[in-house]
Image (cartoon, rainbow, N blue to C red; front, side):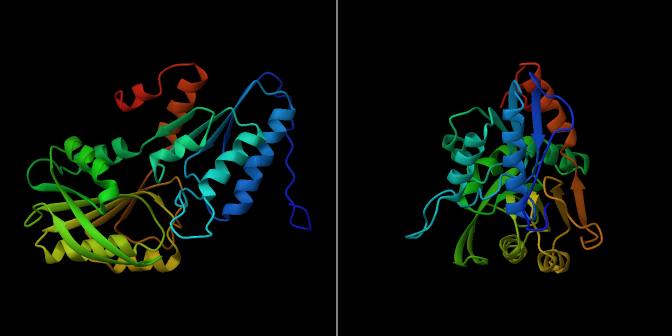
Length: 282
């Protein structure tokens, strides 16, 4: 990074004719990391790389995927356009906020999911069968929560919420049986944890025995980490698609690495093998 805050990148060896995989997650500082990724892609393109795959475990701006209010940008679409313009031949990402973001691209998108990692983790803890319920934090996550319920042979429920402001949420109703069950709430991304905390409180009020939370992209602020630590939840499980400060994270937080999943997917892309086979064909 130069004195005037501009970024400079250069490959120190020849990559002519190479299959290049550039790994860069959309973590803080988002704009700097995104700009660096674009410059790395363009540098590889100009260095005559054969195929360039952008590996972006957390796709930045993916929550801004539509115009919810007048005079707003569709930022996820702009990021997709710039990645293609820079020269990316393929994008490899994980648990997009909305699967339809794949439609913003004209190049192939490999959309991975951390759901099998979470499924294995909770099965290892012995959370399977009728005593467990998979809970969707909102209607948009219902399909994913249902798939997760099938993984654990568990029951299924949905929370209905009202968003009062950008980061303020009220849970109004729960559809499904949660009384005397272990409730597992899964989401793709959280920044303040307010939605999950409000959900956990509502589940407890509806008689859930204990509440567990899992999130793929834990973009938690220090305040968010503190609030989740104080919340009435038995455990929080996240992945490392976005780094979490080990000194500030709560005692009951478990971080699952996605490196193995990424490595396997990269290998299959490189060898022109099936990517969906890694996820059992789904």
